[in-house]
Length: 131
Image (tube, rainbow, N blue to C red):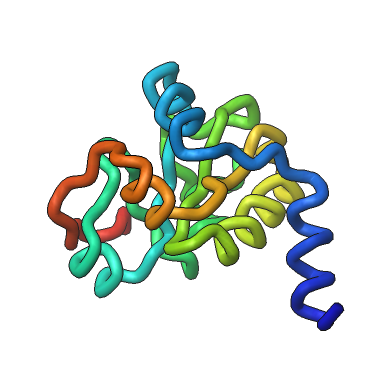
């Protein structure tokens, strides 16, 4: 196993990753879906309606429960589902959020592409990220 594979496995060991249909259920129940994909990916492939766009470079500051720059709706008890293209970077990001005190952070297994392949709602992309 390569070092990066071991790193990913370690990150995922603490996550209760969710499949697209379950992520949709959780979103409808109030979970926050956070799309960390770059603008070009969102523009080319679309976005999940209702997902908050927070590019990866700002993620910890916008979601850490004790950050002065966090999104107002985020608390230590928030359920947050991070998504990327295919579910790799999002696993690492969700593990980072857990380390920062967001115990209910996880990621979307298979990422945006699995969501779209499951036939779940997608809208034309290209929304700006949360500043």
